[in-house]
Image 1 (spheres, rainbow, N blue to C red):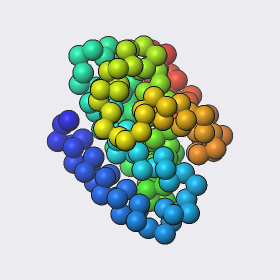
Image 2 (cartoon, rainbow, N blue to C red; image 1 turned 30 degrees about the horizontal axis):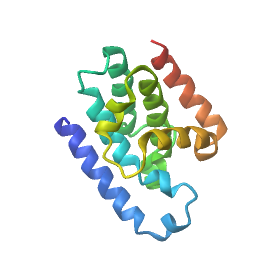
Image 3 (cartoon, rainbow, N blue to C red; image 1 turned 45 degrees about the horizontal axis):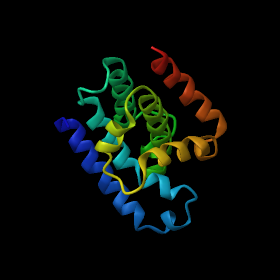
Length: 151
């Protein structure tokens, strides 16, 4: 993981750790998935440097990493706090699903640092994404990501 990515990962983990102890987390409908934001970011970074992942798929991963890092996105973290990572998590699941479909899934599982089954988690997030981020925003995320994925 590059220094900038490592720094972002550490900051993200810290924000999520603090939020996980908050009252908001206890009542937030999607808290379970927000807690995986650092793990998804870590996975994206690990896969982008894996030689078994195609250059085409590395471009998709790099785009998802950039979206995580960018302060400008559809649900801005600067405005809504850690809840703003819902769109990042949904996008990561969308891109990772495309990677799993084109690469041996064991490569994705090998780099997963989270506690749950990553393949199940990807599918569960995709099932719930339109409810998590809103149907309209999810459509925008898929439209933008879809252009990258089809390349």
